[in-house]
Image 1 (cartoon, one colour):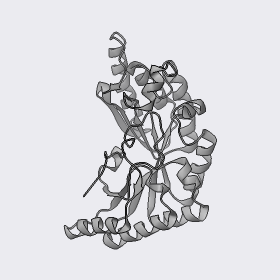
Image 2 (tube, rainbow, N blue to C red):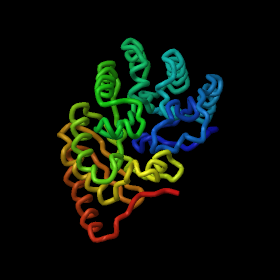
Image 3 (cartoon, rainbow, N blue to C red):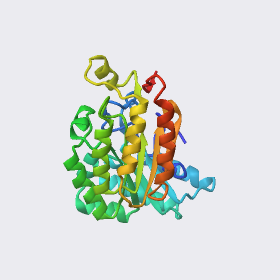
Length: 289
């Protein structure tokens, strides 16, 4: 497969075949993100997409799950997505689900009829970058939505038959606001009930727009201890509905994952042990060069 850029998808999609349908991210304005800043967004030609499907079929590939890349593949026009889905069905008869990243705005741009059509054509899961349950944080990070818009569009996609999965970030609210953000994000999730929650705990790359906010004194990053405490409170406050949880703290090499609610106590125990270990250590902030 020819792939341009950095592969980024939920770890829960590691068993899915990834089919590129675009390069970069059509939004590409989130202040914390650097994954697509160096790329010029463009849609890949249908001929190239079909050639890739043919290549995989020739070597015996017939995956049950397909993940469409790159960032925010759901923003493609409905007719184009339907054509891609038809090609996937043609070459991969065993495929039972096609998943992809989306934004609240890309969902809002689809009519109710289009959402139902896409669900019936095979779109199963949409991963939405919710990031925070606080409106002022979403504004500061230049997200494409506020909470009211997110509630509305998640309801629409669920009514159409799609499964909603969420990306979030501990630390995104900044220093001293982790517990506040945990309470607000837990309240958002308890109402919207994602099937999967992926927590990419914040790291700040020095080339990200957010780093310039830090230099200007407009944002103070949280410490890793604060991020762990935020993660813990969030997990504690989530209600008992079935959900997979995967939380990364890459800078300190801690990962907390399991299925809720049955693995809650195990995950909380792991966080408790790491929190206690770090109380007596110098503060650490997750920087990436």
